[in-house]
Each structure stands twice: as structure tokens, then as C-alpha cells.
Amino acid sequence: MERPVRRVLLVALVLASAPLLAPVASAQPPGGRGRGMGMGGMMSHAALLRQEAVQADLGLSADQKSKVASELPQRGPGGGGGGGNPRDMTDEERQKWMEERRARQAEDDKKVAGLLDAKQLGRLKEIRIQALGAGALMDETVAKELGITDDQVSKLQAAMQSMRGQGGGDPAEMRRTMYTKALEMLSPEQKTKLEALRGAPFDTSKLQMRGPGGGGRAL
Image (tube, rainbow, N blue to C red; front, side, top):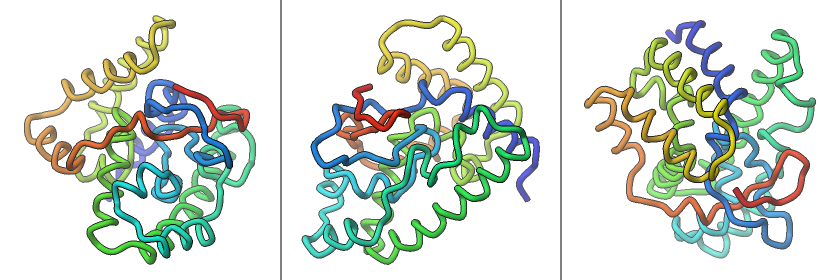
């Protein structure tokens, strides 16, 4: 059973450290692709599956691409349908926001599973973990798989807050540094499991992202 304190820490850490978790991304292409990437720690499978680079890696057929475009909804930043910025919400409002977001993502995940074969779905999960970077350790499913402890979450939170306090610097380099620091907090067994979950390398710089204001941006 998931411990409540860990869930609270994970949510707080994601909201506070989004700039350090988002994948390196190039400018948004015409047509608005990339919408729904939102905070790096909350990237959904559906948002990734709409990415051309991901579709190419998975080897989607023309029919699959057509169904992805027609069956997967375009979500707003953070994977939701609005509701404001969770950083400005009360604890009760944020909890409701998270529950609604989980419900929407669960619905999207079912659609994604119906569009892909087992091999493609497995690869999509690997790409998502790579795209999340250090944020993968704050994903509830990954954290459970690796056996991430409350103490490790707290240490990761402290490291991210320290990096945010430094300010400036190249965002991509900061994310790489944060991922390196995150790995240092894992046990050898956890590192091995994480490497297996990441699968074959994927160039996350090909991913498109949409900023909080709705416009495309390069990170």
C-alpha cells in the first residue's frame, strides 16, 4: 500500500521543480503539436504518442497515426482540461485537481493501450521514463517499481531546491546535472532497475513542448 507521506512529497516536489524536470525540447512545429506536455514530471503517454518523433520510433502505421489524431484529446498544460495553476491552489483544491488529472490520464491510457501492440506500448513507457529524467523518480508507478523511500524523495527535493536557488545556467545542463544527482541517491539495485525501465536510448531533444502560456518554446 502506498504511504500517504510519500505521495504528498512527490506531488509537492513535482510542482516545485517542474523547470528542472522537463525534457530538452525544440521549437513547436506548425499545427500546435506538443500541447499537453506541461510539467515534465506529469508527462502523459497520450501527449508523447502525439509526438512525431515518438511515432517514428514506435513505427506507427498510417492507420495508427490517424487514430491517434482522432481519438486522443488535446489536453491543456499539465494534462488537464484547465482549472488554474496547482501552485496557487489550497491543499484541498490541489488534491481534487490531482484526482481529476489521474482520472483523465487513466482514460487516455486505456485509449493508448487500444491503439498500440504490446511491443509499441512497452517502448512508449520506456521513452516516457527517459523524457522525465530525474522526474521519473517522482512518478508514482516508477517510484513504486524502484522502491523509492521517503528519505530519498526528501533528499531529491533538497537537491532540486538547491539548484533552483542557484538560478541561471543552461536549462538542459541543469537537467542533466539533476539526473546525475538523482542517480547518486539510488542504490545499485535501483539503478539497475531504472536502466532496464528506460530501455534503448531515445533522443529526447526531438520532443516538442508547449509553455504554460500556450505557446511553443524551446527548453
